[in-house]
Image 1 (spheres, rainbow, N blue to C red):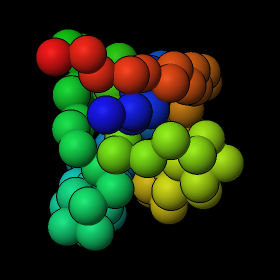
Image 2: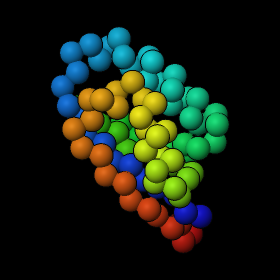
Image 3: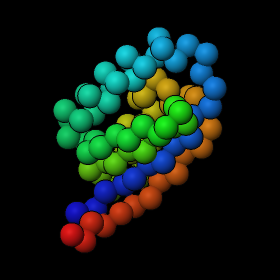
Length: 85
């Protein structure tokens, strides 16, 4: 199964406590739509690692842009993975 792993680095967000509920609502919607398999939060709020059930990077970039914290990401890396077992 091919997936795309997205590794993000989060910059400074002044009102993170206000944005997080909105962020998790969008994440839940992506999970419900079946396009997001996993979300891992990095310790100390340094960003997140997301695993998408999608192999089209352009589509994943558009999905990621729906996240309220997207504009605060300092770095985003996309890696296409092929699950072997």
